[in-house]
Figure 1 (spheres, rainbow, N blue to C red):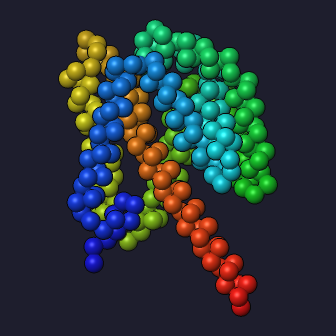
Figure 2 (cartoon, rainbow, N blue to C red; figure 1 turned 180 degrees about the vertical axis):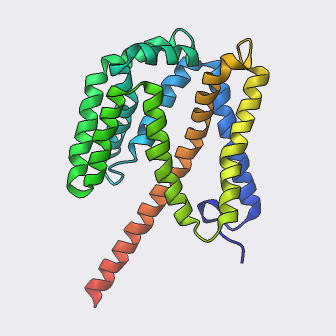
Figure 3 (cartoon, rainbow, N blue to C red; figure 1 turned 135 degrees about the vertical axis):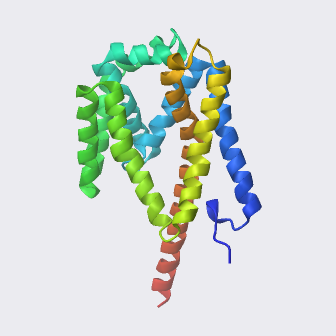
Length: 251
């Protein structure tokens, strides 16, 4: 019997269509960034705030998770405003500096949001509270790119990969194909397009922009898939709990 694919489907044609749509979303995000870079930067930061904030308090209000993610992406602009402004100018041109200015102004609220998330997490998930405090301190004392690299690789990506490989245990070949299809292929597509059609005189001038646009393109469809799967699991868990409760009352 063929193994269930994304979202539980068993049909290879459906998986092929899903992969095609996934890559089209990546390319669409990339094109939008090239057409409207400042709006795309702001939208990417908002989407990423919700996505990264879900690393903690995943069973809590969406606003609490958003505050944590918003804080995570905003605190560096409070502690290193000039560096964040310079990065945004590379990504979105001179108007990108205004986005960094808004984040710097909102910096104290961002710290408060992270601390609130840490307080909420401490009762049921104390390890998450420690992670939030550690991430906040790291964002305040390290350079923005160093902070994000450490957070993204050591915490966020590690958590998602660990969960993904746990779900795919015993099916290593399938997992490898999924990684190639949904990560390597979009990266190559975005990179090829930017080199061929992107602004700038040479590849060396486009490398920072390439990295961040790649990240934006991958984050949006990834977040859609993760959000869908999380809701599906919660719904299944709620149904299971309801059924167990009914059986308990009838026994």
